[in-house]
Image (tube, rainbow, N blue to C red):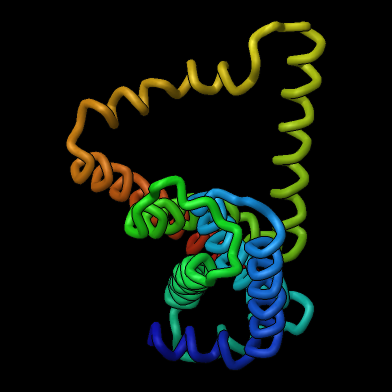
Length: 225
């Protein structure tokens, strides 16, 4: 059933997904040849672009009324939601792979900074998992509006933080503040074996994704078509 749900979504949205992915691939290629970008950040951006691009499946659902069609099939709604999570995650991995491949081109201006390919892939995958776990429930609940609401809220919060910070006329830089607030993560990382720390972070992201999926599935099951 899961494979059929994913296949159905891909067939209904194949052109939109292909256009999104081609545009993102062109953007990654352009950035790699025009800006000096650290390889870790570059891979994360590629992962997020491709995974978020797959949200077109949900965003187009209201416009073309495909939810009524797919929910008329003998496939549980929870399975439909799970398929969309997997499509987004697989797209993110594809974005990481493409970004990594572009960095190997002789003409690419990507700063390796001594980062191992495994670490780059891992960080990209973790960023994809965290990003999708936050935005997918909004998208499944509100469609395209959900994406816009999520992005606007994040921008407004960031703007308010900067405004308050300037009003306080603080001499402490935001970068130093974040380092102080989250420095304990670095301390834990230094105290643990890299493999153990990586496994713990991966487990936390998987739990976050599982919680996000349960919320999204419950929302979709209660949704009126």
